[in-house]
Structures are given as C-alpha cells and as structure tokens.
Image (tube, rainbow, N blue to C red):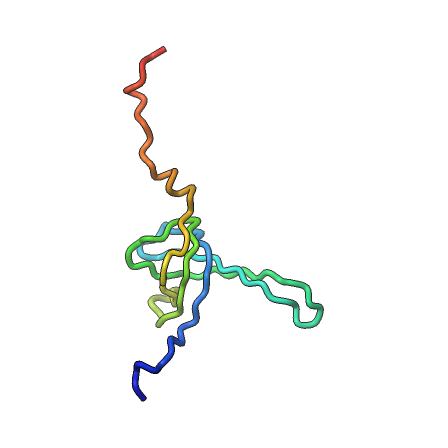
Length: 106
C-alpha cells in the first residue's frame, strides 16, 4: 500500500490553554458538547490534556488544535498542531510599560 493514499488517522481536538508553566508542555482544556443518550439534554464534558509544545509558542488563553501521538511521558500523549487564536489579553500584558522616570514630578 502506498503512503500517499493513507489518511491522517490522528485524533484532533480544539481547546484552550490553561497552563504553560512547564517547559515544552502546555495544559489544554477541551470542552465537548453532546446530547444525553436517553434524555437528549445537552451535556458539557471538560477534559484536560498535557500537550507537547516544542517551541513554547502557546500561552494561557490561546485556542489551539492538538493531535494524539505516541506517548512522550507518563501523562503526555498529545502534540500541538497549531495555535488557532491568540489571547488578546496576553498581548497587552506582554507589551512594554512606559517608565515613570520620564514623567515630570507634580
């Protein structure tokens, strides 16, 4: 069987980064909604995944896409595919603040 006709069979999910304190690792919260099998009420299920981020490019609040991969550690079985949307608050917080030395004293 040729490789060019094989499909990407890795499971992919979207979620929000809730922690980026570890080096090359982020924690992603994935929320999925589905109807209850018997009653039909919409249920929200939340799961947290430890994700490998080789370049440390994702930060708290970013929306990311992740895919499963081989086990990288005891709890890390997912890898970062791409950052879909940046957290706007993170960009404001990382902007340099003007120094107070340049302002005249009142």
